[in-house]
Length: 311
Image 1 (spheres, rainbow, N blue to C red):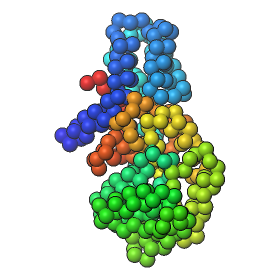
Image 2 (cartoon, rainbow, N blue to C red):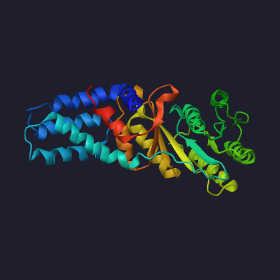
Image 3 (cartoon, rainbow, N blue to C red):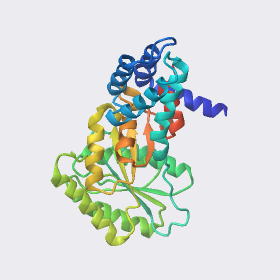
Image 4 (spheres, rainbow, N blue to C red):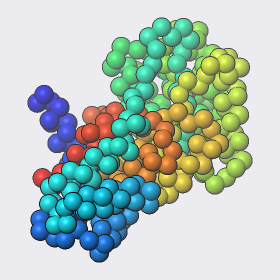
Protein backbone atom coordinates (compact mmCIF):
# COMPACT_ATOMS: atom_id res chain seq x y z
CA UNK A 1 0.00 0.00 0.00
CA UNK A 2 2.85 2.37 0.88
CA UNK A 3 4.56 1.59 -2.44
CA UNK A 4 1.31 2.31 -4.29
CA UNK A 5 0.96 5.67 -2.53
CA UNK A 6 4.55 6.42 -3.48
CA UNK A 7 3.88 5.66 -7.13
CA UNK A 8 0.72 7.79 -7.07
CA UNK A 9 2.65 10.70 -5.56
CA UNK A 10 5.36 10.32 -8.20
CA UNK A 11 2.74 10.33 -10.95
CA UNK A 12 1.13 13.43 -9.46
CA UNK A 13 4.48 15.21 -9.41
CA UNK A 14 5.22 14.17 -13.00
CA UNK A 15 1.87 15.51 -14.19
CA UNK A 16 2.44 18.75 -12.29
CA UNK A 17 2.23 21.13 -15.25
CA UNK A 18 -1.07 19.70 -16.48
CA UNK A 19 -2.40 19.41 -12.92
CA UNK A 20 -1.52 23.00 -12.08
CA UNK A 21 -3.42 24.22 -15.12
CA UNK A 22 -6.39 21.91 -14.73
CA UNK A 23 -6.92 21.31 -11.02
CA UNK A 24 -5.73 24.77 -10.02
CA UNK A 25 -7.97 26.43 -12.57
CA UNK A 26 -11.01 24.32 -11.71
CA UNK A 27 -10.55 25.00 -8.00
CA UNK A 28 -10.67 28.75 -8.67
CA UNK A 29 -13.63 28.58 -11.03
CA UNK A 30 -15.67 26.13 -8.98
CA UNK A 31 -15.06 27.82 -5.65
CA UNK A 32 -17.67 27.40 -2.93
CA UNK A 33 -20.58 29.80 -3.15
CA UNK A 34 -20.18 30.66 -6.81
CA UNK A 35 -23.29 30.44 -8.91
CA UNK A 36 -23.13 27.58 -11.41
CA UNK A 37 -24.44 29.56 -14.38
CA UNK A 38 -23.63 29.64 -18.08
CA UNK A 39 -20.78 32.10 -17.62
CA UNK A 40 -19.08 29.87 -15.07
CA UNK A 41 -19.59 26.78 -17.25
CA UNK A 42 -18.05 28.62 -20.17
CA UNK A 43 -14.97 29.32 -18.04
CA UNK A 44 -14.74 25.62 -17.20
CA UNK A 45 -15.00 24.67 -20.86
CA UNK A 46 -12.28 27.14 -21.85
CA UNK A 47 -10.01 25.69 -19.19
CA UNK A 48 -10.60 22.11 -20.35
CA UNK A 49 -9.90 23.04 -23.95
CA UNK A 50 -6.69 24.83 -22.93
CA UNK A 51 -5.51 21.56 -21.34
CA UNK A 52 -6.19 19.78 -24.67
CA UNK A 53 -8.98 17.66 -23.21
CA UNK A 54 -10.76 18.10 -26.55
CA UNK A 55 -14.20 19.31 -27.58
CA UNK A 56 -16.09 16.04 -27.13
CA UNK A 57 -14.84 15.35 -23.58
CA UNK A 58 -15.24 19.00 -22.61
CA UNK A 59 -18.89 18.97 -23.72
CA UNK A 60 -19.47 15.73 -21.82
CA UNK A 61 -18.13 17.30 -18.62
CA UNK A 62 -20.00 20.57 -19.13
CA UNK A 63 -23.28 18.73 -19.80
CA UNK A 64 -22.77 16.78 -16.58
CA UNK A 65 -22.16 19.96 -14.60
CA UNK A 66 -25.19 21.63 -16.18
CA UNK A 67 -27.42 18.73 -15.09
CA UNK A 68 -26.12 19.09 -11.55
CA UNK A 69 -26.67 22.85 -11.67
CA UNK A 70 -30.43 22.36 -11.66
CA UNK A 71 -30.26 20.96 -8.15
CA UNK A 72 -27.22 22.90 -6.95
CA UNK A 73 -27.28 26.51 -8.19
CA UNK A 74 -24.54 27.51 -5.73
CA UNK A 75 -21.44 25.51 -6.53
CA UNK A 76 -19.79 23.29 -3.94
CA UNK A 77 -16.28 23.15 -5.34
CA UNK A 78 -15.31 19.76 -3.90
CA UNK A 79 -18.53 18.11 -5.09
CA UNK A 80 -18.21 19.56 -8.56
CA UNK A 81 -14.53 18.61 -8.85
CA UNK A 82 -15.49 15.08 -7.88
CA UNK A 83 -18.16 15.10 -10.59
CA UNK A 84 -15.57 16.18 -13.17
CA UNK A 85 -13.33 13.32 -12.06
CA UNK A 86 -16.13 10.78 -12.46
CA UNK A 87 -16.82 11.98 -16.00
CA UNK A 88 -13.12 11.68 -16.82
CA UNK A 89 -13.06 8.16 -15.41
CA UNK A 90 -16.02 7.30 -17.64
CA UNK A 91 -13.86 8.21 -20.63
CA UNK A 92 -10.61 6.56 -19.50
CA UNK A 93 -11.60 3.36 -17.73
CA UNK A 94 -12.74 1.56 -20.93
CA UNK A 95 -9.30 2.08 -22.53
CA UNK A 96 -7.15 1.31 -19.47
CA UNK A 97 -6.29 -2.20 -20.62
CA UNK A 98 -2.77 -3.55 -20.00
CA UNK A 99 -0.90 -5.53 -22.63
CA UNK A 100 -1.39 -9.26 -22.09
CA UNK A 101 1.12 -11.72 -23.52
CA UNK A 102 -0.15 -15.32 -23.57
CA UNK A 103 1.90 -17.70 -21.44
CA UNK A 104 1.47 -20.57 -23.91
CA UNK A 105 2.88 -18.67 -26.90
CA UNK A 106 4.53 -21.22 -29.24
CA UNK A 107 6.02 -18.60 -31.56
CA UNK A 108 7.43 -15.24 -30.51
CA UNK A 109 4.87 -12.65 -29.48
CA UNK A 110 5.64 -9.87 -31.95
CA UNK A 111 5.21 -6.24 -30.92
CA UNK A 112 5.53 -3.75 -33.78
CA UNK A 113 6.25 -0.27 -32.42
CA UNK A 114 5.31 2.70 -34.62
CA UNK A 115 5.24 6.48 -34.27
CA UNK A 116 6.75 9.70 -35.58
CA UNK A 117 10.29 10.92 -34.96
CA UNK A 118 10.79 12.41 -31.52
CA UNK A 119 7.87 10.64 -29.85
CA UNK A 120 10.18 8.58 -27.63
CA UNK A 121 9.68 5.38 -29.59
CA UNK A 122 13.14 3.82 -29.22
CA UNK A 123 13.36 4.68 -25.53
CA UNK A 124 9.91 3.17 -25.04
CA UNK A 125 11.15 -0.05 -26.66
CA UNK A 126 14.11 -0.22 -24.29
CA UNK A 127 11.95 0.31 -21.22
CA UNK A 128 9.31 -2.13 -22.44
CA UNK A 129 12.00 -4.75 -23.01
CA UNK A 130 13.19 -4.26 -19.44
CA UNK A 131 9.64 -4.61 -18.08
CA UNK A 132 8.92 -7.79 -20.03
CA UNK A 133 12.29 -9.31 -19.19
CA UNK A 134 11.76 -8.52 -15.50
CA UNK A 135 8.58 -10.59 -15.77
CA UNK A 136 10.64 -13.66 -16.64
CA UNK A 137 10.32 -13.71 -20.44
CA UNK A 138 13.08 -13.72 -23.01
CA UNK A 139 13.19 -10.72 -25.33
CA UNK A 140 14.75 -9.85 -28.68
CA UNK A 141 14.85 -6.45 -30.38
CA UNK A 142 14.74 -5.66 -34.11
CA UNK A 143 16.30 -2.41 -35.34
CA UNK A 144 13.75 -1.70 -38.04
CA UNK A 145 14.41 2.06 -38.10
CA UNK A 146 17.07 1.73 -40.76
CA UNK A 147 16.83 5.34 -41.93
CA UNK A 148 18.72 6.70 -38.93
CA UNK A 149 22.07 5.29 -37.83
CA UNK A 150 21.50 6.88 -34.43
CA UNK A 151 18.29 4.88 -33.97
CA UNK A 152 20.13 1.62 -34.67
CA UNK A 153 22.89 2.51 -32.22
CA UNK A 154 20.41 3.63 -29.58
CA UNK A 155 18.51 0.35 -29.80
CA UNK A 156 21.78 -1.60 -29.68
CA UNK A 157 22.68 0.30 -26.48
CA UNK A 158 19.34 -0.64 -24.92
CA UNK A 159 19.94 -4.26 -25.94
CA UNK A 160 23.34 -4.25 -24.25
CA UNK A 161 21.92 -2.55 -21.17
CA UNK A 162 19.16 -5.17 -20.85
CA UNK A 163 21.28 -8.09 -21.99
CA UNK A 164 19.00 -8.94 -24.91
CA UNK A 165 19.96 -9.71 -28.54
CA UNK A 166 19.37 -7.08 -31.22
CA UNK A 167 18.91 -7.96 -34.89
CA UNK A 168 20.19 -5.14 -37.10
CA UNK A 169 21.63 -4.40 -40.52
CA UNK A 170 23.28 -1.41 -42.15
CA UNK A 171 21.79 2.06 -42.37
CA UNK A 172 19.42 2.23 -45.33
CA UNK A 173 18.65 -1.50 -45.37
CA UNK A 174 15.12 -2.62 -46.13
CA UNK A 175 13.21 -2.43 -42.85
CA UNK A 176 10.88 -5.27 -43.79
CA UNK A 177 13.89 -7.51 -44.44
CA UNK A 178 15.41 -6.69 -41.04
CA UNK A 179 12.21 -7.47 -39.18
CA UNK A 180 11.63 -10.64 -41.23
CA UNK A 181 15.10 -11.85 -40.24
CA UNK A 182 14.36 -10.97 -36.61
CA UNK A 183 11.13 -12.99 -36.54
CA UNK A 184 12.94 -15.93 -38.13
CA UNK A 185 15.81 -15.67 -35.61
CA UNK A 186 13.47 -15.32 -32.63
CA UNK A 187 11.65 -18.49 -33.66
CA UNK A 188 14.90 -20.39 -34.06
CA UNK A 189 16.16 -19.29 -30.63
CA UNK A 190 12.88 -19.87 -28.81
CA UNK A 191 12.53 -16.20 -27.85
CA UNK A 192 9.27 -15.32 -26.07
CA UNK A 193 8.82 -11.71 -27.23
CA UNK A 194 10.18 -9.81 -30.22
CA UNK A 195 9.92 -6.01 -30.13
CA UNK A 196 10.45 -4.41 -33.54
CA UNK A 197 11.35 -0.75 -34.01
CA UNK A 198 10.27 1.09 -37.16
CA UNK A 199 11.28 4.37 -38.74
CA UNK A 200 9.69 7.54 -37.37
CA UNK A 201 7.04 7.76 -40.01
CA UNK A 202 5.59 11.17 -40.69
CA UNK A 203 1.86 10.56 -40.54
CA UNK A 204 1.27 12.98 -43.41
CA UNK A 205 3.38 10.98 -45.88
CA UNK A 206 1.29 8.23 -47.42
CA UNK A 207 4.27 6.44 -49.00
CA UNK A 208 5.90 5.93 -45.61
CA UNK A 209 2.66 4.54 -44.22
CA UNK A 210 2.68 2.10 -47.13
CA UNK A 211 6.13 0.92 -46.05
CA UNK A 212 4.75 0.15 -42.59
CA UNK A 213 1.99 -1.88 -44.22
CA UNK A 214 4.71 -3.76 -46.13
CA UNK A 215 6.49 -4.58 -42.87
CA UNK A 216 3.26 -5.98 -41.53
CA UNK A 217 2.67 -8.11 -44.64
CA UNK A 218 6.20 -9.52 -44.49
CA UNK A 219 5.80 -10.53 -40.84
CA UNK A 220 2.61 -12.45 -41.62
CA UNK A 221 4.52 -14.64 -44.09
CA UNK A 222 6.26 -16.25 -41.12
CA UNK A 223 3.35 -16.04 -38.71
CA UNK A 224 -0.15 -15.27 -40.03
CA UNK A 225 -1.21 -14.11 -36.56
CA UNK A 226 1.61 -11.57 -36.21
CA UNK A 227 2.19 -8.83 -35.32
CA UNK A 228 0.28 -9.57 -32.15
CA UNK A 229 0.47 -5.98 -30.97
CA UNK A 230 0.90 -2.75 -32.95
CA UNK A 231 1.91 -0.22 -30.33
CA UNK A 232 1.68 3.44 -31.33
CA UNK A 233 3.89 5.83 -29.35
CA UNK A 234 2.61 9.41 -29.01
CA UNK A 235 4.23 12.50 -27.52
CA UNK A 236 1.69 14.17 -25.20
CA UNK A 237 3.52 17.46 -25.56
CA UNK A 238 2.27 17.82 -29.12
CA UNK A 239 -1.30 18.17 -27.84
CA UNK A 240 -3.99 17.93 -30.49
CA UNK A 241 -1.37 16.95 -33.07
CA UNK A 242 -0.93 13.71 -31.12
CA UNK A 243 -4.64 13.09 -31.66
CA UNK A 244 -4.24 13.73 -35.39
CA UNK A 245 -1.31 11.30 -35.52
CA UNK A 246 -3.24 8.64 -33.63
CA UNK A 247 -6.20 9.01 -35.98
CA UNK A 248 -4.14 8.66 -39.13
CA UNK A 249 -2.02 5.76 -37.86
CA UNK A 250 -5.20 3.98 -36.78
CA UNK A 251 -6.65 4.44 -40.26
CA UNK A 252 -3.53 3.09 -41.97
CA UNK A 253 -2.70 0.24 -39.57
CA UNK A 254 -4.54 -1.94 -37.12
CA UNK A 255 -3.18 -0.14 -34.05
CA UNK A 256 -3.97 -2.28 -31.02
CA UNK A 257 -2.41 -0.24 -28.22
CA UNK A 258 -1.03 3.17 -27.30
CA UNK A 259 1.87 4.43 -25.25
CA UNK A 260 1.69 8.15 -24.41
CA UNK A 261 5.05 9.64 -23.49
CA UNK A 262 6.52 12.87 -22.11
CA UNK A 263 3.57 13.63 -19.87
CA UNK A 264 5.98 15.09 -17.33
CA UNK A 265 7.06 17.97 -19.56
CA UNK A 266 3.75 19.33 -20.77
CA UNK A 267 0.61 21.17 -19.66
CA UNK A 268 -1.30 19.35 -22.41
CA UNK A 269 -1.75 16.03 -20.62
CA UNK A 270 -5.51 16.33 -21.11
CA UNK A 271 -4.97 15.08 -24.65
CA UNK A 272 -5.02 11.56 -23.18
CA UNK A 273 -8.76 12.07 -22.64
CA UNK A 274 -9.28 13.38 -26.16
CA UNK A 275 -7.48 10.37 -27.66
CA UNK A 276 -9.43 7.93 -25.50
CA UNK A 277 -12.78 9.52 -26.43
CA UNK A 278 -12.04 9.72 -30.15
CA UNK A 279 -10.43 6.34 -30.82
CA UNK A 280 -11.19 3.97 -27.96
CA UNK A 281 -7.83 2.21 -28.49
CA UNK A 282 -6.39 0.63 -25.34
CA UNK A 283 -3.80 2.80 -23.60
CA UNK A 284 -1.16 0.31 -22.50
CA UNK A 285 1.53 2.55 -21.03
CA UNK A 286 2.44 6.12 -20.18
CA UNK A 287 5.84 7.74 -19.85
CA UNK A 288 6.27 10.33 -17.10
CA UNK A 289 10.04 10.76 -16.91
CA UNK A 290 13.45 9.51 -17.95
CA UNK A 291 13.85 6.64 -15.48
CA UNK A 292 12.87 3.01 -15.96
CA UNK A 293 10.35 3.42 -13.12
CA UNK A 294 8.72 6.32 -15.00
CA UNK A 295 7.44 3.93 -17.68
CA UNK A 296 4.29 2.36 -16.30
CA UNK A 297 1.03 0.68 -17.15
CA UNK A 298 -1.80 3.14 -17.57
CA UNK A 299 -4.24 3.25 -14.65
CA UNK A 300 -7.30 5.44 -15.20
CA UNK A 301 -8.02 6.08 -11.52
CA UNK A 302 -4.46 7.06 -10.67
CA UNK A 303 -4.26 9.28 -13.74
CA UNK A 304 -7.44 11.22 -12.94
CA UNK A 305 -6.45 11.57 -9.28
CA UNK A 306 -3.07 12.95 -10.34
CA UNK A 307 -4.72 15.40 -12.75
CA UNK A 308 -7.26 16.76 -10.33
CA UNK A 309 -5.46 16.68 -7.01
CA UNK A 310 -4.76 20.20 -5.79
CA UNK A 311 -2.21 18.94 -3.26
